[in-house]
Length: 411
Image (tube, rainbow, N blue to C red):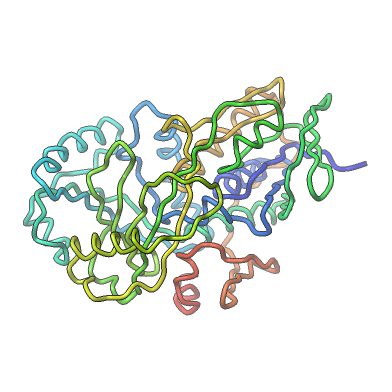
């Protein structure tokens, strides 16, 4: 008779990896199903690698709740696993008087959200902190907590730790249909049938499709594309923090930041996308990003970019997360995690665990093991990494852009 899992997680992006780690660490017998050949292959393979404080999230949002839970805990996780991160902070820069008038409003909003460390700084202090910026700034806000991480290593470490604590992970496994059983759900996949007492849908860009298989419809995905231009690590000295624009109704805007490995990146854009698959970059948009970078950071002028990449956000009809518990269907939906999946991942996982325990009344069948142990990671050029004795394919451009020497020096 086939195994019956306490929990089946559908989707192996950062959120799915965090959820299977959280559930396994608390004693649940878990299975993670990913339709692609490799984990972290879709939305989570095209993010910025920035761990946000939530300073600009809506004060009454589920997103802010999850980010605030994640932020302090993620440092414990990265330290415990021995992963690279740099708390370089962020500087929001106003380039016009109209934008400068927004700085106090944003500072007050962050205070209400509980991020009291955000402070307005004078122009002299701005240029003391960021001498490489254009001298046309009109105002600035300093956000000290903003952090850069390796997003691929973070996600894979969570999944791998779940695996070494007993979780089963199956890739290249597409969920094709869902059949409600007396005690849960049977998932028919491209690689066999699996039964779980509770299914957690972390399908990302295909989250609405997975919901439909269970006869549910909480949201619809309207994908948004983001493009990035990547500069070499030797340009990392030009900025000391992530340089943010004044946000708009669409989001944070196009950022100039450096990765945990020192590459300077400009992006992402916010564009409509007619596909959920990762589209290619277009030269016109990349050139515009290059001009933006050179305008804000003159030292970038004349420096060729070394890479470009795109990401696709699983946006929905609303800006907030869609996390729904349906006990009668033995189902939890986690959807609409637009661009803060990394920043909200551990908070999302914690919320899901409590929903499974409180709403579904499902107790773990095993014992709790929340111990954090350093990862034994060996990088194998050009695109693989060995975690203990398990090989993973590196799917994120930020990780790929760091040299093997650079990666090894951080681990």
